[in-house]
Image (cartoon, rainbow, N blue to C red):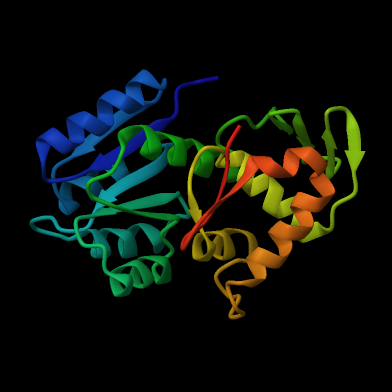
Length: 225
């Protein structure tokens, strides 16, 4: 499969190099832009950009405006990077159609893991691969079925979606809000604690493998293989 193109936009050259080095190591092609105007010029000129990693605070045109421009013509996945861990900023980003929101400083390895998870979810990665596998858990997305250590497990639709999201994001701590946004979608206005109920049922159906879903106290959950 051809190497996927990632556009990295940040006015800090050291930050761009850090992200670029980790992405290249993971077999991605990387395009760089130092500000919003340069980013849009590259985005329109280059075909088949698979994902955009976009800083918020930049000269000439900030990340919010770049995201608006991109969303006016494309559904390409966008990860926003910001030095400000402000809830209002995060909500604004999701309102603009941002797929992921990461606060600086961050782990480059986690950033790459999230890039891969988003690309799997949007079918850019592993389009031929209809099955997900982790720790004896096999998810067949085409058949909408799950086996654990070779035994079939009967899951509800949301339990299936929840387990799939955990496996796609294994080893990554996921907040309840992030799980709601991605499994129940952004238009869900219920209590985030509904996650706890579904996780409890899912763990029960998974038997001993249910222990792989770890509780991150005060935050959410992580599938730890």
